[in-house]
Image (cartoon, rainbow, N blue to C red; front, side):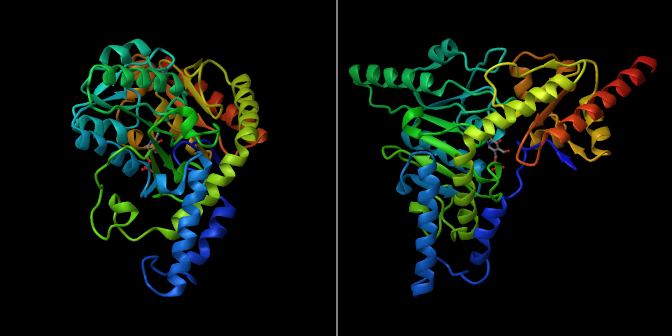
Length: 379
Ligand code: PLP
């Protein structure tokens, strides 16, 4: 198997798996129980949360553990419910941001042809009613890295301006960093974000675990109510093994950021040098592990099936949209035509890949494309 879809899922690292194991069996206790072994589990859980927080330069008390990034994104938007205001979000956000933003009548901020936020568009839409702006740190279809610090400084200036005019409505910046943690050294203060989504499933931790960093002045409403866990914002018995695995994985991810960037830049260049007849879609501002190729006039879905037959797994875009046969809103937002979108292939590199695999994959992709070109030409 040559797996080239690490933006969709990453395998759980051996270290994370080993760290999780005892919490499924020997030390399975409910952290809320009163006896000593359960209290020990509660302490391990809190320590794991502190490790996750440290990875982004935050404190344990600033984190709400959730059942994945979707839930963290949904939780972040409850700020709009509380503060009673409008929301803005980037046109290329993941559906877990778009769909919840739509619930609050959110407006899209447009992106450039390379997928980067159009600052002028943000400024023109930033009215006094806006309470939340959501801009992902790195896009899940293109890998585009957004200039978050620049967005944060615009927000700071808008806050000062509001205050000077006696307007009390707060203004917060949320960022979905699901795809970024393996390749960027994330620090919430440096980024200037008030809310940040993390996703265990993309950093070689278990699925169904995530976290929302919440700066202390932000007021949220619960996504689930019940036993009052996670400061009452996300009730339900804690996923102890999941969070232990997440902490182990995110610590490893943080330690490997520099090495990963070098490794993926080499693999990405090797792949691009060995492929033929494509347009590179994500030329600029991209995470090094994303390669988005456009074979205009070809049906990329057919390429995917042909490659799958040889044990090579790639994607057309976000896994959830691809499985429903929906056209990518991300590729549409950067101005690709319908036929260019149909011909686009997303390759996301990860820990499982090496140079030999990349060369083999490039050969198979070239052959599949040649095959398709010949078929459509004659047909
Ligand atoms: N946000 C981004 C950028 C993603 O890539 C994903 C994963 O597909 C999600 C959110 C949703 O994560 P999950 O399905 O783990 O809740």
